[in-house]
Amino acid sequence: MTTQAGHGRAATLVPSVSSADRTRTVDRLSRPPRRAVPLRRRGGAAIVAGAVVLVAWELVSRAGVVPAFFLPAPTAVAVRLGQDLTTGNLLAYTAPTLVEAALGCVLGTVVALPLGYAVFRSRWAAAALEPYIAASQALPAVAVAPLLTIWLGYGLVPIAVLCALLVFFPILLATVHGLRSLDPDVVAAARLDGAGEWDLLRSIQLPLALPSLLTGLRNGFTLSVTGAVVGEMVIGGEGLGLMLAAHGRSADTTGIFSTLIVLCALAMAIYGLLTALERHLVNR
Image 1 (cartoon, one colour):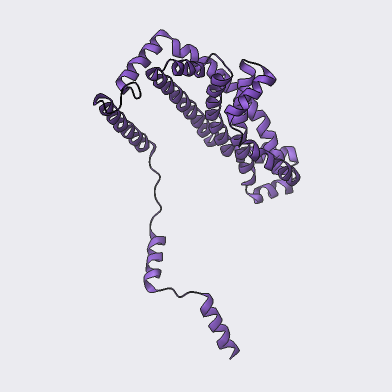
Image 2 (tube, rainbow, N blue to C red):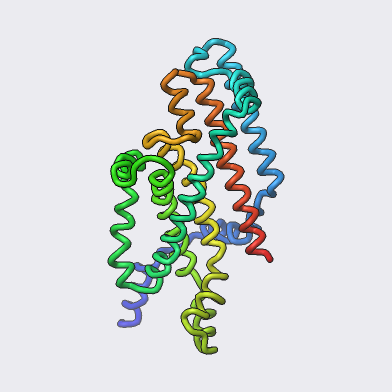
């Protein structure tokens, strides 16, 4: 009687599986894994999608559905972009933005890497710092910029600090995630071989966590460009943010689109260079 009751309780806890469900499960498990889309196909798909958007945008603008004051045609933006590049205005304004973004990225990385290691190594440090680090991300850059102006004045330094604040969080998260995802057996084997903390960090932890660190750096640098533009628009500067602000005050929508294209191209170039660097360092 006890055995039958036990089997009865087990039957109620484990739902019955029909033959159709079993067939679907077997089919799903027997399917070959999806292959990654080759890089050339992804690039071709992106080009086709962009061309479709540009053609639709041009047709809408030429048909007068949206006034050119609000949405200039892509051909008009291309002509304006060529003029700005020929005269050297855009290139002259791009250099300060790059310098501010690079300095901010370096500053944010210098602070985020050791702090991320401290959060990884110490539970006390994680418990004490993680709530404040997360709370700091709720502060918008536009709200922090006036404070930086009061504390640090105008010019390169407050804009670089603003960029560092935007870069700090993704690099910190990437550092902690990369270190926490290490194979514990590899770390334990290194400790058994007599590796100290410094040797473990230099020879095991940093090389294995390098892909994650480079991903955080790549995403952080892209955000750093955004921080530089916001800082120039709020604090004042000599880069692309200043040009955007000037175009906005004069209601020059064509100039705004021309500057935005340069910003997008700049972000894509930085992202591509850091991606290539990541592949080189990881695969060597």
